[in-house]
Each structure stands twice: as C-alpha cells, then as structure tokens.
Length: 353
Image (cartoon, rainbow, N blue to C red; front, side, top):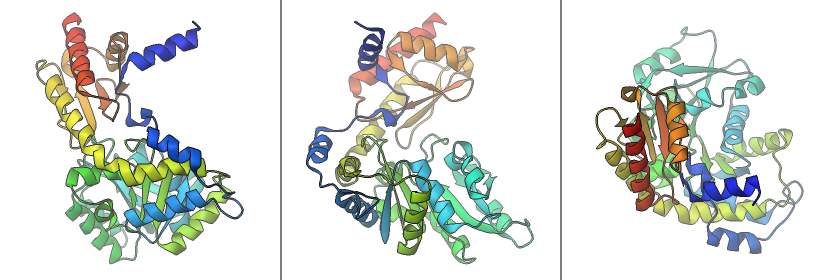
C-alpha cells in the first residue's frame, strides 16, 4: 500500500474534529449532481446555479442571490459592491472578516476597524461612539456582523442585538452585512428560520460546505441592485464558473434539506463538552451554543501542539486555538461513539502528561 493510501486509511479511521468543512456530500447530493441541468454561467447562465441563487435568496428572505466559490469571496463582494474606497468597516474585534479575511482590504481600499465585544457581539456604546461625527476622518461605509461567531466558540448573536445594530446603521444610511457562514447553525440554536436571522441586515453570506455538507460554494444574498453589481464584480475576480450546476446541485440539497439536522451537531457538541469537563480541573471545555467547543489546556502545562500530536496518535484530529487551547467542531460524521472515543483519548493523554 502506498504512503498516500496509508494516510487516507488512517484519516478515515480517525475522529475528525478539526472542522465541519471536512463533511462529505450526501448520497442525495450526488444524485442531484448526476442529473443537474447545466449551462455556461458566463454566457447564458447555468440553470441549476440560478435555481440555487433564487432558492437560497428566498430562504434568507432576500431579493436576489449570487453563487460564488467561497464565503470569503461572498464577503469580499459584499464590500466591493457597497463600500467606497477609503471608507471604514466596523466589526467586532474577533470577527472572522478581521482575523482571517482582512487581506480583503488590500483589494477593496477600505479599512477594517474592530470594536470590543462580548461573545461575538460588539459593544453597542462603542459602536455608537465610532459612528459619532468627528470620531474618525473616515466615513463608515458598512457595519458587519457574524453569526454564529467562529472565534467566540460558535456563539450566536441575539436577534435583539442585531436589530439594535441595524437601527443604528439605518438611521445613518449605512448598510449592514452579515457574515453568515454558519447562519443555519445560528437559526437552529435560536429555533427560528434563517430568514429571521438575516432580517436585520442588508446583505448576507452563507457557506454551503460546512455543516450543510456541500462540497464547495457559498451564496451572497441581498437587494437585487447590489447582487447585480456583485455579479459583475465576481467576473472581474475570476469567480464565474462555467457548468457550475454540478456543484450548485449539491448546494440546493444543502439549503433545502441539511439545515434541519444541525441541532444534532449541537447536541453532540454539548455531549463532548460535558464529557471533557468530567476529566478534572486541568481541562476546561466551553459550553457550546452550536457545534464548536473550545478547550483550555492551560492547566495541563502542555502546549496545544503537543496535545494535537498525542491526540492524533490516538486517532483524534483537532486544531489549535493559540498556544494553550484547541478548537473541536462537531458535524454529521461525528456520532456518540466518536465522542466517547475522543473523551477517552483526552483522558489518556491527560494521564500521560
């Protein structure tokens, strides 16, 4: 057996808690992909991609949608279509658009200003101060929110908070964008529809390849004129994808079917957190709202890199969150037995410390 095949077999036998991006397409997705009507999305348009755009926009309560290769591109297009160069964008300080996507400012000519917050929700007083005339020589061109909030351990923004941000922005004519990569997780946690989560914002991005299990892609939704401009800009960025209906077909299954099961992932995450917290005071796991568990390893005296290596040797794949923490993400390939195996591995590694 080749080295690559050995690695693939080991990965298949592992409990993969690195991210919900490792989810594989369902059989129903493959079936849709095999029979999807196709066209050239750069010419007459791909009918399956257009179907996904219209369906996703309706689910999100928006006028129009645009299928793009990634949620990073969706957020970038939202900025390019709505914010002028030399304007600033206000976000919570630990937002994914600041921490991971701030390179977008290189292309947009805008400035990202992170404001302090709690559990991913920016401080409203600090937001109002930043919006006060004279607070900055830069005009604020957008306020961006994120739910569920990645860096805050999958925390979900209260709808009242989102409404308050929308009111502050609306009074000043400032658009609000929602990085909704895991919006369906937020909706499941709040027990509301995705449209209710997206209602306070002008534009919203949705990732299809995380817990929703599509192989790739995202949707940007919002007012028809904004989406039309985003479609033009998508072509400039090289984001037009020819017979992309093959992938869009999986996205259709994702947005119409897969959201209904995300509460299972949240329950699995709670079970994982509870089990880890029984191992003693040296390991502290967060209590998740959605499907992300953060594990503080400071009390063990061992760096996250060492934990990752030891856990991988035990068949548990994880990712670091700084020098002393790990991030564990549950998804549809993680069951009760996998959780028990992960807890046992943490316990064994702890005993060996």
